[in-house]
Image (tube, rainbow, N blue to C red; front, side, top):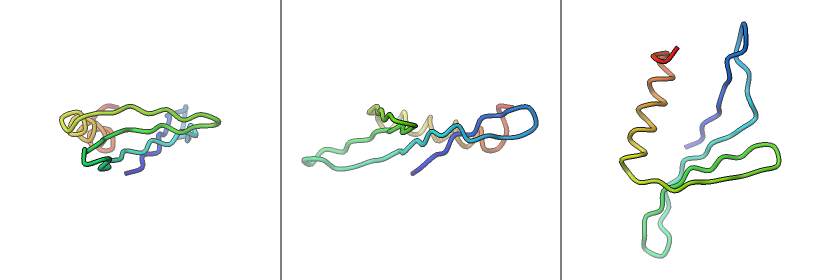
Length: 69
């Protein structure tokens, strides 16, 4: 899943250039979940569990629906 982050600026939305990738992979028989942030000249990542993914997706859905404006 790829997520582009938009910033509110005065009259509209502006892309801040960062890309977030949410991935779940199997490595050596273990399930590994991580969020990778890529921007201009950098990349960073964190690992997370299933519960965190559920909270993250709920937050993304709420933001998309405009509940946090």
